[in-house]
Image (cartoon, rainbow, N blue to C red; front, side, top):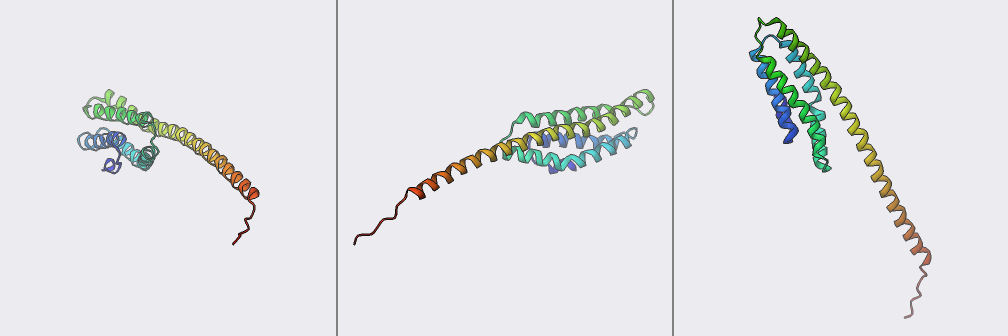
Length: 160
């Protein structure tokens, strides 16, 4: 399903587990069908972003701790989905409680990924700007050196 497309090890595995739990719970528990559908829809909407984050993090040799933040959040969701799937239809109080928890999970997941993704994006942009500034300074030094070499160079007259 949705989890199969995320290629990375840590984040992809957590995403896959949550996605499979939602699918499995949706088949076995009709109590939370609408919650599971909404949660699955949310996962599908953030999947491309998670793929990009993990791919770029690997390409840029980023910190694993950043990926672990997202991974832990997905694992928490997976545990809640598994717990809620065990609730019996006749247990109205628990059904209401877990329905509320699943709705909160969906909302908080979107908010969590929005905030943390934005923060990582801002930090990454700052890193890029710093790197560009440093490269620009190096290019300025090279240009100045070449300019000095051109000014100090006198044409040689060939004596043949």
